[in-house]
Amino acid sequence: MGIITIRYKLFTGIMTIRNDFTTGIIMAALLMSACGTTQDAGIISYDPPGATTETKPIDQQERLVYQIDDAGIYVDNRFDGARINDFYKTGPGHYRALITPEIAPINWSSWYSFRIWADEPQLARIQFWYEDGFHRYYPKLSRDRQTWTPADSVHFTHDSDIGSAWLSLMVGPDTLYVSAQEILDTNTIYGWADGLARDKAFITNDVIGETHQGRPIMKMDIDETTVDDPGVIIVIGRQHPPEVPGSIGKKTFIETIVDDSDLSRRFREQFRLVVIPVMNPDGVDNGHWRTNFGGVDLNRDWITFNQPENRAARDELLKILETGHQVYYGLDFHSTAYDVFYTINKDIPYFSHGLTDRWLEGIARILPDYEIREEPFGVASPIAKNWIFHTFGAGAVTYEIGDETPRELVRDVAEAAATSLMQEVLKDKTSFKSLERSERP
Ligand SMILES: [Zn+2]
Figure 1 (spheres, protein in one colour):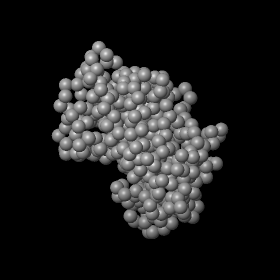
Figure 2 (figure 1 turned 180 degrees about the horizontal axis):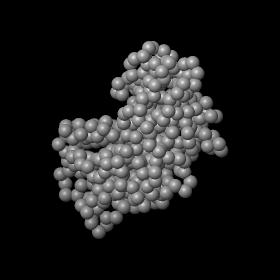
Figure 3 (figure 1 turned 120 degrees about the horizontal axis):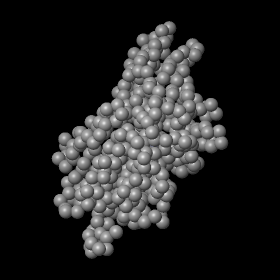
Figure 4 (figure 1 turned 90 degrees about the vertical axis):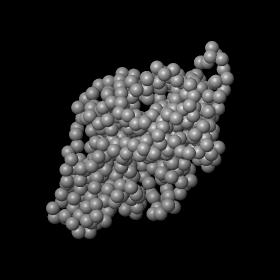
């Protein structure tokens, strides 16, 4: 049996995530029930005290091959999404992978991703050693970046007291990717978005701005509306580079909305989607733990707008106001220790009120065995969800997916989330239409 235990030592600031995956299929239900026992995620949502959103210098990772001459072992980070900052031998068959963040202090989303190979097959015991952070992500392995397997628990140990971990690997001439999560870099996600746009004439992708390093910020416009007063749904993602499960969920969410089902077709006659799939392309491709290339947590810059990524998103989304179209909901995809919907406090009115409750109830009807966790918050903090609420008067959610939630479950929940949202906003739009204009909020 596989178990997942997650505990937090809030007083020492050390976070522990230990997974013991069995080989073979991971039982979704098992993990779900285990996730339900999780304590407060305080340490993962840690914000460095006094952090501002002005651009600041970051430590750039050197891209190179680390070579261990006497063992004939090689490790490199020369690909988008990679992060390893040193690799050296500590004893016979023993090595240390040093992982450092782009800036410190920082939220401990301790991302790593590297390739390893060797002249001759051999066992390598690798210690993950972090500066300014602690081990968080259970290692995933891949030969081709398509198929990923969690490392066998027999070969992995995690010492939460020192925040370090050890992985024993058979290495050889075939290159192996070792990564905190699946590698979903900017090109992969843009490639997916372009593929969808090629298949579906109603999807248009545009560049709405540039990052500090000149990477394009892409917007998808999903618009097959046939009515004068289409509603709008806003979807953004990947403000935080390591939060790959959020990208997996967002992909399924969008694919469900653009599919050929009767519900999706009816929805698309009435509703348009504006999607910014990668808010932080520099952070994603540089293997950052948290920030953009300006050393800023983008999900803290939705009031000051000091960063080019936030300004590009804001300016693009503000165009919705000029059309006079009603925004019905906003979704911002992230990942944390467990699945949770960060919603808006129930006593705060927004359009259309009660939609969040009905949407979550709809997910529960589709997936009766899935335990929905909702944590409502006020709307004062400088995050995307709150900007959507203040700008459009609409409800919004920070859609958090667990770091180690089985990917099949991530997709099932995202599909249910898309289905339920389409059903509920269609009901709202019908009743909204029946109101006299003067009665509209
Ligand atoms: Zn996040």
